[in-house]
Length: 78
Image 1 (cartoon, rainbow, N blue to C red):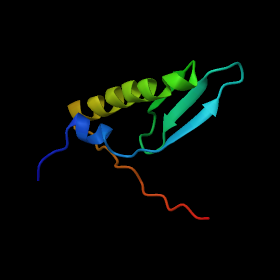
Image 2: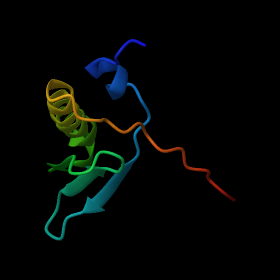
Image 3: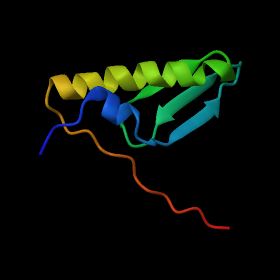
Image 4: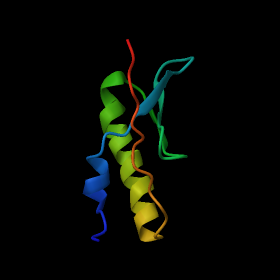
């Protein structure tokens, strides 16, 4: 079985939690990647900041041969 590469993981649909800061900006965490968090000053900056955080987190895990969880599937109900 071939090993996934960084780009393979970045393409997966990881879910985020976004928390508005008390004095502006947004704290963002990747739910399935424990400790993968970032901060964005503006809403528009969130995608770039998340990609940077995930690249660092996943890159480190790959380098150290640590397990990388795949995104959990969440069923949305009406």
